[in-house]
Length: 242
Length: 100
Image (cartoon, rainbow over all chains, first blue to last red; front, side, top):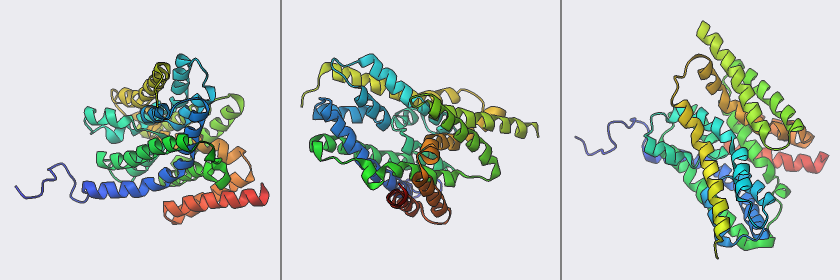
């Protein structure tokens, strides 16, 4: 036995400190970009008559920006519990695909690690995890260091937005509305694997835009993801056939 | 600082629905063997979902957003992520001011 207590399973090159530092660097742009939206959600919660504690609880328990945004848009008194839950499900249905896509990279985690970790599978955490998984094995320490600062920023900034109230500005003023598009574009560039990548992406873009025009709501995300996956399945058949 | 029971019920229900979506795909795919078409589908999914998320913004909002998206991708090709993101946001502000 040596004094090194990192255990036999840990790879020689990556300490959990190194993993955490890399994750923190990766998550900063997403966490910063999220702040104006978190403030806005807190402000909307206040406008709809939610208390500070309720705004904090919603962010801490639901942790899903777009679902919270739509829920506050639909909010009435008495509270329509069932339709808010259904709305949250529909808006977040894309996470079913995301959870499936991340599975092969966290299959080695214990169930008691994976299931709590998946609570934090917001779009940005998922996308940054997939970007990491393309370059190195996705470790729990990396994932945790992505999720923790992002989650804490979300909860504190929505609460702060509730407290600040009318001082909140429209995020589009400073181009913050484009920040997530920019982040996802950068992650997409990292996921590019040559021409084979192109066809699923084209199918997804065409389907998403078509559905976005035709159907109200967030269905375009699911539709695009499924269309891209279908093209990927065809590519998988071809690869399998040799 | 009170928490209304109905508000708590709504938040809990939303939280449950959200958590279900986050574990369902993992739970399901864990139970099947990943080969052939299913492996292909899963491999194509991350990029496809990201493309679907941004496609309406990038392709239909206007020339400022489409142009800024192009700038972001070109920056990301050679430069660190943070510079590409900041450059993308800066270019959307500039392009909106220039061409609306």
